[in-house]
Structures are given as C-alpha cells and as structure tokens.
Image (cartoon, rainbow, N blue to C red; front, side, top):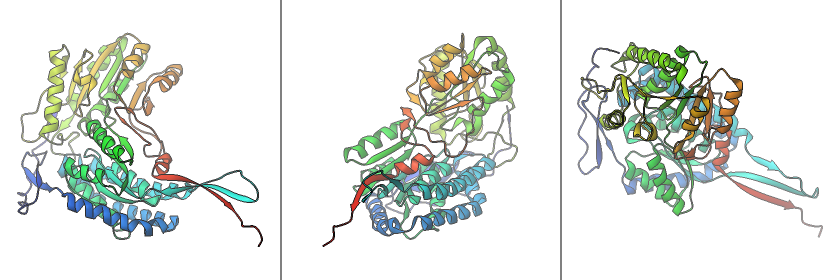
Length: 478
C-alpha cells in the first residue's frame, strides 16, 4: 500500500446561526472541521410536506408525457452539473473524484430511464362484458418521502425520486446528514425542472427523518440506508398505515469455487472489498474460498491490497480515499479487532493509518472464524475477510447463513454450480463471475435484514402507485 500527498486544506466553516440545531462534521480527508449541517425542525418538516401535498393534485393531473419531459430536462441539468456534483461529493464524503463524477452521471441516466419506463405503466384492460369497460388503473399515492444514504447518494436518490415523480407523486427528500450538501444540491437541480413544491428537500439527522416519516400526509416512505434505521421507519410508518420500501444493510458474500483462476478471484474480491473503501451496500464483506485455491487467492489478494494507493480523494493518482468519518472508522477497527481476538490472521493491513483524516489500511484477514461481527454485521470498510471451506456446497451453505439478503457473487467455471447458486442463494441479486454489473431495469427484492420492496427496475414504478379497479357501463336508453 502506498499513500499520496496530504489533501489541500479547506477553509474554516462559518458558524451556524443562533438558535439552530446543527451537527458538527469533519472533512474526512483532513480531519479539519467542515460546514455543520443544519437540522430542520418539526415546523419546517411540516411546511415542506404540506407544500408537497398542496402541489400533488396539479402534478397528478399533469399528462404523463409532460412529467417524463420534466425528468428528461432534469437529467440534462444533472449532466451539466456533473463536475460540480462530483467535487461536492468528493470533499464531503471522501469519495474519489472520478468515481463521484461517474456517480452523478448514473443519477442522470436513472432520470432518463424513468422518463421512458414511466410511459408504459398506466394499468390494464380486463376481459369483461363486451357491453362494459373494465380496467385496472395505476394511480399515484400522494406525497412520497425519500430518505437516502451517504455512501452513494446520487444514484440512490435519483432512482427513487424519478420513480416517484414520473408516476405522479410529489416528494419530500431527506438526504443523509453525512452527505447533506451533495444531496441537497442534487435535489435543487432536479427541482429546477419541476413545478414549485413538487420536490422539496429538508436537511437533518434521524430526528428530522423521523418527523418526515411520522407526518400524516406522507403516503409512502422509500428508504435506503442502515437496517436499524429501516426497522425504525417501518415501525413508525406501519403504525399509521403508510407503505414502506426499504433497501437496507448487506453482508454480501463472494464464493470462489474450485477451478477458478486465483488471480481473477483475488481481483474480484479486491474490487468488491476496496472500491469506495468498502462503503457500498453491495461491497464484498465475506469471501468463502474453496481450500484448494485458497493459498493462491489470499497471496494475490494481499498483493493487490498492498498496491492500493491511499490518499487525497481529489488526487487522480489515489485509488482509495478515507472513510466517511471517524465514527465509521471506529466500527471497522472494532470488527477487525474482534475477529483477530477470535483467531483470524492478519495478512496485510489491519490498522488505522497514521495521518490526519479517517484513513484505514486496505486489509486482508485469513482463516476468519464464524460468529464474529466481521462476518455477521455490516462493516462498511476496506476489509476482505477470507473463510476457507472444503467444497462448493459448503460455500453456498455458509454464504446463505446470514441475517441479510441483499446480494451475492459466485465465481465458478461450472454452469451447473452457477445455476444451483442462482436458485438456492436467498438474496435479491445473484452475480456470477462479476462482482459488479447488471443491465438497467433489474428489479430485485432484498430479503430479511436487507429490507423489502423493489429495487431500481420497472417494478419500482408499480410500488409508487396504487391499483384501482373501474367497471364502466352506459346507462340504458331513457
């Protein structure tokens, strides 16, 4: 592992206005104070939801083609602001600048995709009496609350915002306090292509989010974030009958079968474990490797970890930046130390880096025991824990033994093994021989602790609507 030069320091943040509740933040690349996040209070949340509710009748009545046109205009505006959005995400969360800009491009793509898909989800005609008309209409729900995470906020927000808006809902968006400025700016850009109050954004922490979720005028809550937050949201929204869509934590396994090239396997594990410092919902957090290839895989994986260039996320030479903050770094440290105490072996890394900022070394652990937090609880850090197993069947069994069910990756040269894995792994997404990737429109339902509800495919549009059956007959002649 190598490090780049220290990042450029940022100017001192302005002090918050008197009487405002705010959250202190730090620049993850330098450890210096960053601009505090001002938390919207109950009155501000109420005003935002009421404004969105008042805007809903006119937006609902807007022809679908016009709503789709507004999303296409929003996509163009986001593409024009890719550099701005990318730089903002980079400085706020430590995401590599190139990756942050690419993330903003994906957000624009999702807005465009929804504009197309939204024109084909109106409902269906039923086979009823020829003298009558029977249809099932799909109608918007009303005000949708969109609550999104910090780790990849642009696609997470754009996918949900677009699905809600194109189907005729209005939205109140609460981005994570850890990525407040990027989330607010994206919402502002999208809202600029919409009528007033169709999209409102509020800043704040869990208290602000709870006020949004509890509001009686919110018909649906769509949340991407932690499992703990998702369960609180489900309880609060369910208590008043609101619908909930949740994509929550993951503990995604990667399986390496016998006969897989160890170099290829190591590259796939490294990509899944170290991209964005492991701070992705679908990061590789557990690697189950058949014993006959384990030595070679671990050796190559350690070599790749040592080649990671850790440093300033704005430097083009950097391949891994900091974690989002010291709180996240503390979780990673706790999980790694717990695994070591239980008998895991450090191959490389396993420590916080001795420099300003929230930096953790790319880490490979071998022979990890079961029932440690590093294998059972979402870590969200640059750690690749390897578990050695006897054969492919044991790989599948241990990969399936999880409280989460978001995604899984299987590396195998056997078509029979690939098909069996796709069938038996109880997760929303199974990826074979590639840790990342997939075509647009791939709807997936997370399982167990990872949430519930359609992902970013056409089925998400259906979730944003309610069905109504209509039977129409003409009155008889007078």
